[in-house]
Image (cartoon, rainbow, N blue to C red; front, top):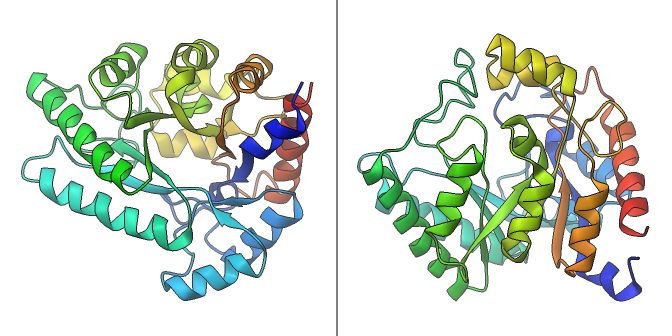
Length: 304
């Protein structure tokens, strides 16, 4: 049972990717950011991350958020630690995003190593054509994350690594290697239930095994029928999204059982953001309707 005290620990957010898409901007690109913010608020959520069509001018962004009493959940860095000559540039990008986090009053920096990643390449099979890191690359990645984590921690921030399909940290063995080789006090995990499931990683077991290191959560559901086609047909990430592989928690078309995940989070008194992230085409899935569905499902699931 979710107590009143627990409700103060967990905050519910939703990403603008329910309305549009940062990797493939033409998906929902006609949706003004004001509509995204208005519907985020109307459905009961406390905030979300920024989208590609949000104001780049910080005072304008803060004004739009404050007028709706919304918060930024996190910021994102696609790291390049394993790319030649990009190690120190990546650390500088981390510092820039930490400055943004401080400016908007939030703490979670979500990162994923995108060097040679194929999730943004429309002609590559997202599960099959991804990079496989060699020993030198693993060394650079773990060293870089440890350094970035220390930088973030000194500023009161949480660096949370996001295992992501199409990258060199996709399957369970790679997740374990990354988490085992990074500092447990400064490098957290961003649990993404949908990416885990798509990569044949059990999101319930992943939550159970890393509950003490989960610092940020993306709640994403998966349509199993579409996933099966994506695996067999070697779909790109773009094709998978366009075919409707992802949906929200609470959609009966989704395959993930969230009840054990909610139970684990409540029992361990998880403190942080639960952020709905369903990368759907808004022309096929009404964003506000799905956002409302997800909010009601999560509220009910956490209070059982």
